[in-house]
Image: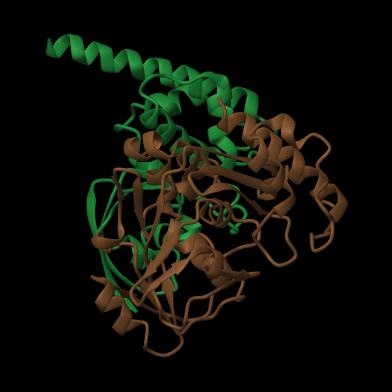
Length: 265
Length: 166
C-alpha cells in the first residue's frame, strides 16, 4: 500500500471539509477500498473515515418508510428487528453478503458508492425504487447507478442514507460463484403499490439493470408459474470465465422464479 | 504517522504507526502478538481474524489507526493463564487442526459465532458461518465438530452460572 494520511471525521460536515484535501477518498467499512489500496489499484493521498459518525448509523422504520444510515453495517441491516418486519427480504439479502467478518465492517453506503457489478445492494435498491440521500441532494436509484463502478455521485459528495417504502412482497435470490461467492446472477423482486419491479445484479455488461421481460410477465400474474417460457435476451449480458451471456440469461429467469416463490410464502 | 491508543487483550496499548499500517501488522510487529496470522492477504482466508469491539473482523483489511480507541482481542487473549478457552480446548479434544496455520482465525471466528448464537448451533449453520475461513489441510470436519462441542459446553457454563446466580 502506498503512503496515505488518515482522518477520522466526527460529523458529515467535518467529512465534507476533510474530503477536499488532496486526492482524498471516503472510507467506510473499507472492505473494498483497503484491499484495492493494498494491491495499489487505488492510491488516494488521504482517507476520510466515515465509520464512526453517529448520524450515519442505524435503521429507522416509520410506518412504511424505511431509512438506513449510510454507515450501517451489513450485520446491523441483517439483524435489525424492525427491518425484519418491514422488509425481511432486504435483511435476508444483507445476511448473504460476504462472510461474517466482512458483514461486521462493510456498509450499505460503501457498497452502493462502489457499485460493483456483482454487488447485492444495487439490485435491492433499484427494485425497491429507493432514494439515495447525500449531503447535497436526493437521487433516485434509477438515476444513481450509472454503470460498472460508476454512480451519479459528484467528487466529495457523501451518501448519508437510503430510504424506501416497504413493498408488500419482496425477495432476493442469488446464484453464487462457488469460489468467490459473488453473484453470477442475483435477482431482487419487489411488488408494491406501483407495480412489480425486478432488478438483476452480477449479469449486466453495464452493471445492475431492470428486466423488462420478467416484469411484464409478473405484472399480469405475480406467480413463479407466470415465468414459465419467459425468455430473457442474452444481449448486453456479461460473458466471462465463469458463465456465458446465454447461461446468465437463463439464470435470470430461474433466480426470478425462485425469488417470486420466496416472496409469495 | 498517527498516535494510536487501544485496548489489546484487556491491556491499554499506545504506539505510533504509519497510517497505512494494517492492524494485523501492528499486532504482529509492534506488539509481538504473532498468533494472528497473515494467510491470503486478500481478506478471504480468515487466518487474521481478531475481535474489534466484540466483533470478528479481518485484521488484514483494516488499518491499525482505524482501531484506535477500540478494544481488540486476539488469540493470545482467550486463555486464562494455563486454562484454555472452551473453544481452544474443543479444538484440541476433537483434533480440529493439522498444520495449525488457520487455527487462530478459526477459533476467533468460532468464539464470535458462538456468542452470536446463544440459542445453539447446528452443523449447517457452522459450515455457513465458516465461509470466510479457509483450511487447506481440508480439516473442516473436525473443526465443525469442535465448534459444535464448544457451543454445547459454553451453553452449559452459562446455565450453570445462571443457576448459581439463582
